[in-house]
Length: 477
Ligand code: 5AD
Ligand code: SF4
Image 1 (cartoon, rainbow, N blue to C red):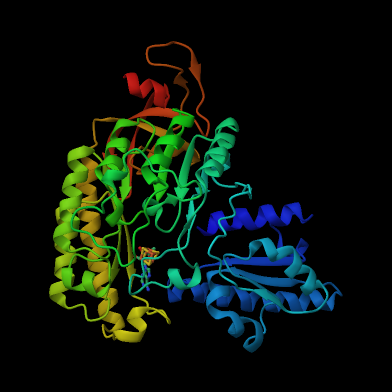
Image 2: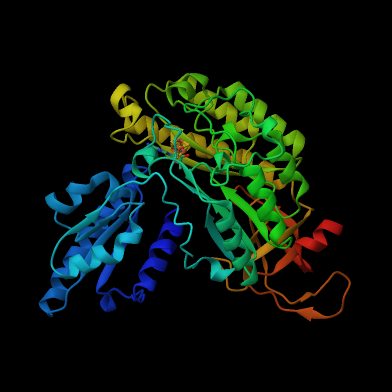
């Protein structure tokens, strides 16, 4: 989300005549795009701000000014603390106030501290074309909705990013078409809660409105919207734009996976067979305290249904260790869920209490820090053991890989991702342009290549590339 917010803010500033430098010495404005989801993310920014303030003093000695701004969730959450008490920043802009940045900056240039942290019910930046800057231009994020109404009891997002609102489908389709024309090979539809997407701008009923129930065994804390165009409609439209462009989406909520979404993912060869299914915990008691709207059993049933409809699907998840009142028994339940599901990719966090949330007001953050840490390590180790086994089942298979660039460890190796979003590393060579063709071509970022997998661990797959390919070839293979 922050990458995308940076791209949006940057687009607005570029239009206002700003140009970008990556060198601090050349900058007269420094903007930090911030996250408040956990204490640790905020601590990083506080440290950065202290360094920047020291640089600012040095720069001012040379009669030059440096304006420091904080954008995003921390601006929203800490408002006066950042501006008045600590006096570390000149400009504050909350997630819905980026259009106001040129005005805020000009106030700051005039010597005033300036802030806008108003949240909006409508802002989706639908008409702002982000300046994409990821993966050398072969992969791009496309924001489809902002905010979240879910109110999970631990989560600050509904308070910092506001109410859930969807960007009109027409502007999303337009942006994806533009990216496709520019040669982008992979887009990730982005939002806090992507699969509850609803474009209510043209209140037409989609043909499959009858099937709009929540996933079986799931509840929503807020009234689900009716009518309009839904996530399945959006996936349908977006995936038809360019059959050779991969479509991913993140983050969904497990409650909104009706069969029609799953069937569409299975049918379309360019919608990646990877689902992020944030479980957070394997204990129904903790899930209830987290206000996630499902039990362990409902979650497992959903996994079973997903695997029935999309065989071989790759699954990823988020987990929180040490949420309020979590016992060893609850923790063991999470361990057993990890073993039972067998995720390909996992993200693990220790619980970090956030002000304003339901948990802050009503629950006690009573799991000691060392216990949280130990549980986190246990979750990661169980995940790794299982993920190694899951990834090893791919040994001997050929995987279609979208090449990202050099691998981190060696310039002789390339790295990319398979359909399931697992990293694949392979030696750099020239390859036949098609199977059994003698004409050879080098591999560059943005190419699709077929890689035969020879080894695997919990983080990545390794293999050797066979030939250049495309999503279209794969469909007919
Ligand atoms: N403490 C720890 N982890 C959290 N997350 C969200 N809020 C918190 C918190 N207060 C995690 C959840 C979510 C991911 C993006 O961050 O696992 O899915
Ligand atoms: Fe936070 Fe829950 Fe919304 Fe995700 S779904 S952003 S965890 S409130």
